[in-house]
Length: 121
Image (cartoon, rainbow, N blue to C red; front, side, top):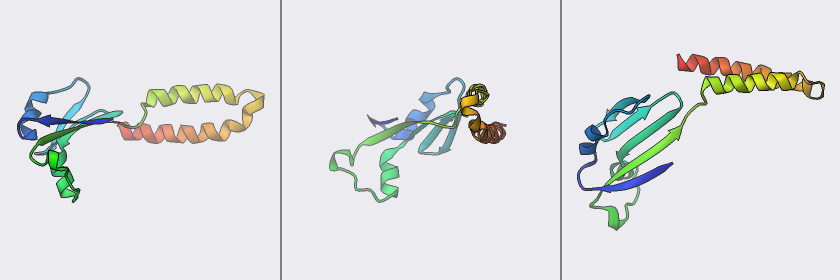
């Protein structure tokens, strides 16, 4: 999900007012980019016009003299608890005679859970 806001002042002037957000780590990576991160979600605020200019994008005339703040919300990897619940459900299903061939799926899911647990440490 993403949206733009036309602002009255340069974009970095607003970052101190955004403050902290519960459960998120705040990181101002550059003068023009602010991140809020958790293991499952990321919020990003940045100067859209500066980013567009750096990539050589043609900026519509209506936005050329504006301060355009871009807000993005991204979902990351699923929480390990969710994957453990899914593994449990699949194990129950795999023990049913009509779908016992799903054991390979459970083994693969188990490997993925272990690798994701390592990511979160």
